[in-house]
Length: 183
Image (cartoon, rainbow, N blue to C red; front, top):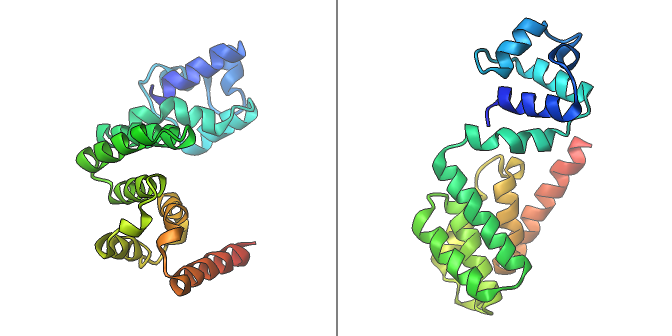
C-alpha cells in the first residue's frame, strides 16, 4: 500500500480524525490529499506524525514497502524469507530447494552466495565449496563501505567457516574498530 493508504489505515486503527492525526504538523486539507494519494508528504512531516502517535516505524515500513520496491526485489525478499524459515526449521530438503530457486531466479549475487553456503553447511559439504565461490565472497568485502551493508554483514555471518583465519580476523577487527569509533 502507498504512504497515504498506510497513514489512513494507521489513523483508523488509532481511532483518530484526520485533524487529530496531523494536528500541529501539517494542515488537515493537505493531509486529506496525502491520504487520498493526490499529494506526497515530506519525510520529516511523515516521521513527525508517526512519532507523535507512537507508530512503530518498522510496522509502517512493512505496510508500504511492497509498493516501493521492484517486483524482482519482492521475489528476492520472499525467497530469502522462505530460505530463513527452512533454516530455522532445519528442513534440509527445503533449504536445497530454495537454494536452487534463488540461484535460478535471483539477480542478487549476495543472496546467491548466502544460499549456496547455507545449503553446503546444512548438507555438511562446506569443504566442497570451490575457490571460485570463496573468491566471489572475498571480492564482496573489497568494497569500502561493506560495514554499512546489512546484506554484506549477513553474508559475513553466513560464510565465516569458509574464511581463512587471517582474513576473517582482519575483517572482524575492521568491523569492531568501526563500531567502536562510532560510539
